[in-house]
Image 1 (cartoon, helix red, strand yellow):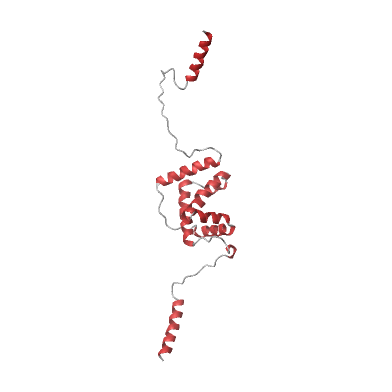
Image 2 (tube, rainbow, N blue to C red):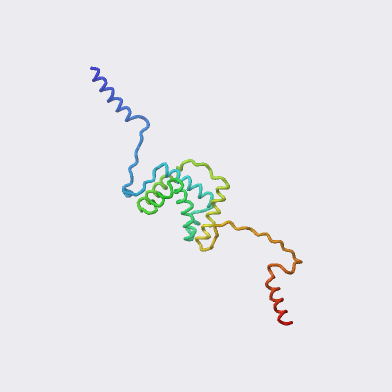
Length: 188
């Protein structure tokens, strides 16, 4: 008798738990991304979206869709690096970003996850003004390099020159005075 009561009780408990107020619904994995080399988790995707939005607001605070649609290929490249791939690298690491970039299915799934969480990003700390200015400077320098303008990565020394209007023989016009000196020596 006790066994029957326990059996009925367990069955009722199981049925009751399955109909409880909060049920977890699993989303089906999209079939077109089956066998992807890297599958971005929901948690990582939410963090990626948040960091991406943060970078976008820092580097391109006034960017409109029309402006973005008319980006040059260099601008589009820098935008994709700084707004998409660098934040993703911060979340999953450089090795995994290379895997995602090298596999079409992994890249497609990452884009799917990005679109899925675009409107519900994870909370991340706000970027400081100093971090933002550094990121802007890096993006600007990288854009210059991509456009073919050489930018040295080394720190350049700033030379201060004292210019006085009364000085006659300076380093700027030394070559001129050497020519006059040698020319007058030849004439004498």
